[in-house]
Amino acid sequence: MTEPMLHHGWEGYMDGYLKAVLDTAKRVIKKDWDMVFILDGVEGGGKSVLAQQCAYYCDPTFNIERICFTPQTFIATINTSQKYQSVVYDECYAGMSSRAAMSEVNRMLMSVLAEIRQKNLFVFLLLPAFHELDKYASVWRSRGLIHIYTGDDFTRGRFAFWNAERKKKLYVAGKKFYSYKWPKPNFYGSFVNGYVVDEQEYRQKKLEALTYREKTRENKSDKEKPLSNLAQKQQKQRDTLIRRLSESGMIVKDIAKLGGIDESIIYAVLNRVQSED
Image (cartoon, rainbow, N blue to C red; front, top):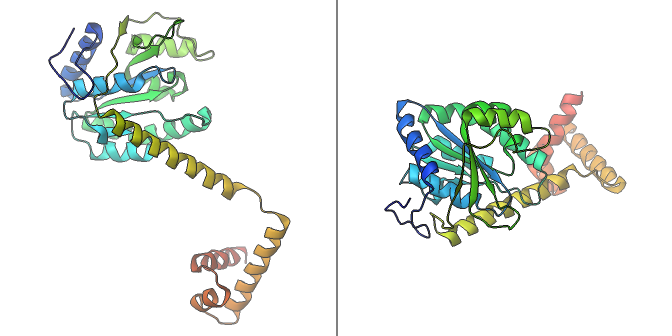
């Protein structure tokens, strides 16, 4: 079924059964509901493409500003979105610990589900496997699961859809082995390649988000590394110097100038000493 719309690389084709699901969602959301859909499947299979097409079909104002790659930007976007708008949370976990990433996503989702409900938003969550989501979000709050698969021939553009009732059974039955065998999906469908937003702008935004996230992880890892014996000795000497100068009556500003130490470090040391006393 072809819809009369053209937006960047997408010519408007949408599977008829999926269109019917989204038409129902567009009608029901006006009765003070929210519409959260999950898209999962193999990386590179087309989740981002299909999610953008669905988001734009539900909300013609949808744009790249409402495609999010981090929990922080997702929360901010939810808070600033208007009623009946679409928001896409695009997974960006390449090379990361899946368990750590999903723990972060689950905490974030619990904090914004109430806001999503209040604003009557269309939300599309993209992730490798919906079984990793918190049960409340995956089973009870999402309206449907769109599972993207490629088959043995690695052909893109295929998906299977489970409605809320079948998705609940699929979560329980397949949780242990991440299985999609039972129950069977409500229907199978296909989609075409074609970005709703500018593809190059989208890829650049995703790359910047991934680069920022990797740098954040590296900085966190460096902070968590144990100090060497020499570094521990130097830190102890620094802290002792700060404490004695402070006890002598010298103010923080003068200690910083004398020792070439940042004032924030001096305050942190003095606060720690005070708490230990």
